[in-house]
View: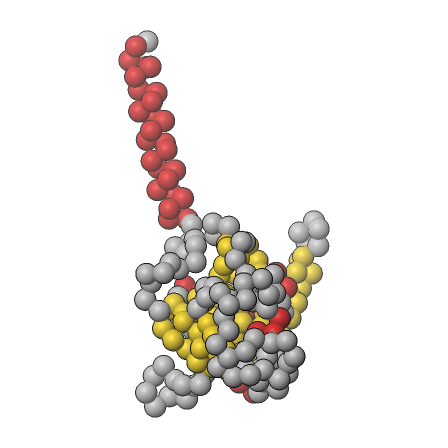
Length: 199
């Protein structure tokens, strides 16, 4: 009897260790936005399109939200190559500001301080569609969720294009040009300058 009582806590401890190991493998590596000490890359460019639907400020990981958009870079990351679109995930916690509507304006140039994350690379076709289903879970087909911005060159948005993914967090962008939209952010404005806009 005494022997069985001693082995039960050991068995429970072993089960707990196995469960933690399985969860660690099963969960994605990125469970929160990158911190301040992560190495960042600077991208300069214009927003070509935004992703709407369930990808529009959806909740992921440890309670943080994501807004996805496509940026047309002004310079190439590789010598001799032409600039191409990239995917940007704006990741933020619920108490942090969303991107204001005025951010999505092709006439504006931005400088973004981002972190490269190959785990969220996607083709434009994968990013452009969302699987829809009814309340019972029955598939209803795919919804087109990509919204190209007014004035953006749509010929750059090729379905087969593989988009390298970068993560943007609050306070890590600034506007470099005036917007043609009224009430938009001015050059140098960032989330820290106007924390409540768009929220």
